[in-house]
Length: 532
Image 1 (cartoon, rainbow, N blue to C red):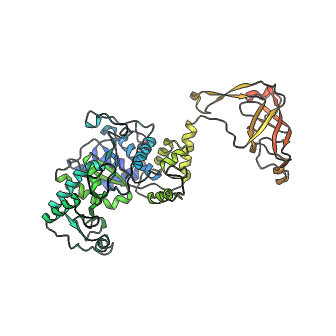
Image 2 (cartoon, helix red, strand yellow):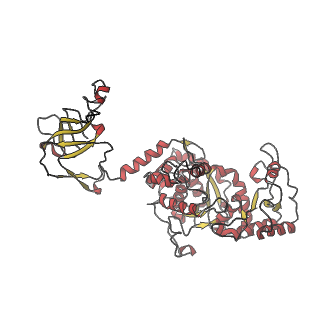
């Protein structure tokens, strides 16, 4: 059975169904509701689907590819949950979700981030069914680090560095890439604007042999950082700025956390992303809306490496709205600054919107998945109130959490007519709605403690401050009044012992009524309304 998002149809599941002929499982019937808009969105996108070509082969595969340059936050929770849930929804198509680390920028990446990302994904998917592993190469024995809710081992973009390099060489040989030596500032000037076309680099028409020689020199470490970059040769007059000869490789003389010093040039995300997707058999690359303008470049790269025979799959990129929370910082750059400037104790500070911080608050992973499910999938950005996540947390914890008594501000109660040394046990249900969780034993004796706010002292400072009037709706314990101790007896207050300096109550001397045990009200007596 599919979990999470798969319970509600959306335009992405509709696109996959229409383009592959494979129906998702476990979807709710929402005919006439949100399903109608899902069909409309799918129909609008399906005409450009590459799955209609012979290049589409299953199994249906998604992926979650974070960059290991920080901890995952609530915004990532939606991407994690959705990618995994969509794969499970298409179990008939052997659906699977890969875990891939986009480690193409050694300047900002760290092994600490790698470990935290894997831990967070394992946590947020806890309790979800695993993917079936077939007899292919992915079925090999996995290391401890590779084990997780994803399909197969943990993959890294750096696993494909040689393939990505070969793809770049292929583009140069086809005359579709060139080595440029404009500075970053000059490239911005040449790029143009949304209303003005760009200007071609003076190095755009280098001959193929010179480009190959320079690119090999970049690979061998012959040049300093910033001296050269490799750019795709597409269209400097394109209305899409991402298609105006984008940079696809740059020089970085830095050690990589996975490959060490093997490479001194690293691919840009827009170039490596479609190649890695195609190489590992991803059929549907699900991204947030900020990558919508990057889709033409994604397709441009994917089609060329496919036509060259470097890969045998042609993946499809589909975008959906990101998760935005009101009054909540989800910018990784700003979160890093909070940590580095020591405004918080670390990435897992409970005040942080990171998944590790949310976990330290005690939020269960099922609550995060429920929250993401309720936000739904669409192409419209929206700002969500944080209270909705808190509601989901309460709902999940209410259903699953055993109950216990806790007192924040204790007030001592002495039962004056209780036998000294005597203890009585009460069987209390662990959950008011789930009898299968059983009972727990609560001892009851001469001394018990109640919450201070459950007793209103009419004769003390709070009573004087309130002009001797009860707070509106107050039905709990009062001087000379009665109240029921939950699961136990009715008691009445006979005397208040006060602090000589503050006049605040420190102990209540009370009488219990044996005939009122465990909720019983003796015949002829009025039912006590207050329960504490």
